[in-house]
Length: 318
Image (cartoon, helix red, strand yellow):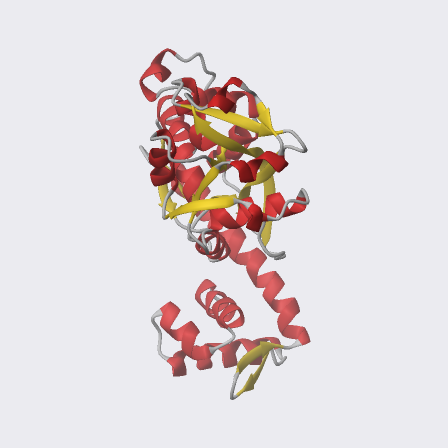
């Protein structure tokens, strides 16, 4: 049996449809069907049940699928290790990140890595959590960085690397800027600027407030905007306050444009997670990046630094 046949079977099993599998693999449907039939003849077992609605794995098919995934992963890892031995061969790591991480964490991290690991090329995709998760599942992305939880999936490994605090953000000239914290009961007293309905950022904020027993409908929302950057511009102009990720206003707080106030009743956090394929072993360079991100002290220093200051940053390369 060849690798191509295993790949065809895996794609059909995951697509649950021969037509979709044929499109993904750029093959004809008869060719796909023939390869599946050859596998079933070779192993002497029916691997797929075929109906008008698509295909499903039989009991034997489930066992075969698990082993095929392991075999393909081993072949992929062997190929990468052999390729890495090639003369002047550069390593490539494919990353995905959701918007907040992609805008406020990843640029600092990549600037740091550019200096300590110039032998690695990082290919980056910015998208929402659903897209990044699917790309990790399909192995188009090696490592995903996402905000918040995702539905359980046995093929996805989720590791938290940062607890991102949601803070109340006011202009530095606001009377509340003399304080370090605020109670939930005080939030309705001021005009609130928020993301539009349906925004992931807004949903995280509302869920977090509800978990603390606060009804988001009590907020005095006077403006809804389509981006975090737009909200920051409006708040800096003194038109209201907002609730944002502490990461997104770190620089403006240092520059005394904003003051970030913690919520007294109970600090509100959301996890930032690393997403990898549970059935795929990471390469040495991928593992280096994951270990770096788990180093909370170093990551905090990297995020806090200006890109131009990183040349003098004392680091130890791997």
